[in-house]
Length: 393
Image (cartoon, rainbow, N blue to C red):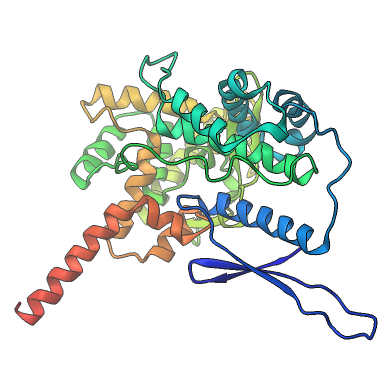
């Protein structure tokens, strides 16, 4: 495949053309491309791979595979769901994609893949913006429409790789409409202290779970996936190496992190260590009572009674809303807000972006910067104020 080299804001695609009859190396073919604005790092990587594959095919004059060029989007999507998606996507991702497919299929399903044009997608997104959510009654969020676009791009990208298309017609057809993402719901220091005090009135299971997320910034599914062997009391560290997902109608899924950066270590204080030890004693008593055995290092920290399975993330989501209501705390907070709160507090405490990114398990530092721009902006203002004060200007 063509190599991809970053050149500032553009990328250089290079295809090696091999050697001629005299054994001399042929001049490589090159092409500069500019990814569309607004792509996520993952979408940009996929777009570049497509461009590289297309450019190499052009350079080598490779014909497209002999496939059915009359296949409709509906027929191809059915085949994609049956033969490609199950081996490529996580069950949770596939469940979300099926929801997106239900949104675009009535309008685009009857078109042949080769007849799809950019205006078909733009019209689809315009129509979706007029639709209302069946649960809330509010217009579909821009995030939902962006998800439909991402799903379409993924399906058509696979169609292109399979030889059904010479290019992906959905690229460059989506443009974010409306306000950019608002600041994440984050508890300020005063609210965080009130929340911690409220948690101390709850059962030790919920106190430990929510405090762990506040202290480390781990995801709710990652916290559910912890086992006692992942906790190192001597080093005061926790190895995050699992994620728990529950898809409607499916059994609990325990899987490895999606990226290498998701497999990481986070650290806790002496006070958190004391709480964890107290909670372990509680778990030991429960295990002896309900399971009539000793607690083992391979047991999940947050485990269902009498079962070897972890608790589901939604159990804690529901409980957290009850705690907020009971103690008169802001109702716009959720369990994921605790992760954002941890990150914001780390940044406010002076942690650099690379450190924060590593502790949160982000695959790229740019992701951390995108999500927590507001927190770093506050640091920039503070730094500017210190500089100006020192210069007396």
